[in-house]
Length: 471
Image (cartoon, rainbow, N blue to C red; front, top):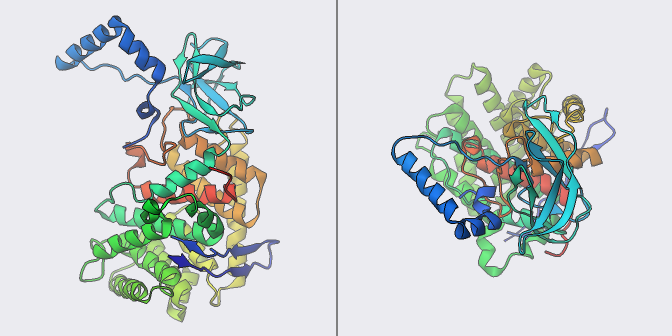
């Protein structure tokens, strides 16, 4: 499928930059934690050492008797998704039992390829952990490695390659619809916001997605993003009830209404049948919303999102009034709620009679909030993300990617990259949220977010990559 998304421009008078929604160009459409990747050295040792088998059998016996055993947690944290040739590479050690040096071992033959110093540990204010850093930026030979210390053990395996991020991006694309969609109001919101940010990434950096498709073979046609977005839209439509709602839930119905309007605007002009289906679904959802009381803060934010999307797609004074009245009453802090921020993306990208002064005010507030986050992040010498919450990290990455697209900054790009590494295992808990194969971990903190977080990563990486090297 080939789709062309027009360039849209919106100039905010008080700012010195333009909000440009780039042309998409013409384009076709399990958990992987470090534990799943395994550790070759440990596996070989287990095979050769009878003591290890005996200890395992003893542990199994204890568990069978109802005795709980502590979970083994690595104390050497690396980015399991991989490092890039020519860029910074660091490892973080937890606690004080790791010695003063570390070795980088080649996984293929378990030989030492680099030895580095472990800097004196510092107490991380945010996590409370004693953490130390080791740097191995000078190691640029492509391959698969792991970190070993004589005292603290070893890390999960990781790769080094020139095209690490390109491969990661392709694998994220291949796995957009790789997990089951949650049959609940929260699941509808997650899929809807995931679709929103993915389509926004297409609008901003469509040429990158077009280039990515050249690296997918014919058997992977259904893994092109447009195909997966259409599948997600079909799934959402199939869950709409006869009364127009999603689960009789206000927020889920508003999210559905908004994403149907956006999908119709992007896909409908090229596929008339799809456009009609999305339009009918959006109108039925809006009619249901209008029949419900809208008095709470959360309901008003949700209705704003739906109205902003309908205003962007269809115009209309009624939608415009609802959207602009909400924004004028809110006055500030436009990035603290998902419905509000995604609604703002829809409103300011509209070609139809937006209030330029209001857009300028909104943009200035968002820039100020992002700059304040960056100042806090500067204090985080360990991970460079400024928070220890995966959810907050992904929210910051979304906002940074948005501003970085408008006014590119090395500082913003560095934080986006740090966040990718954080989600890949370089964090205070050594948790790999998403693996190099683009598969998200099946852990509690991921629940309710897989599609939205996939979209945010695709947006951040598409803005950061810019183009593809050979993969």
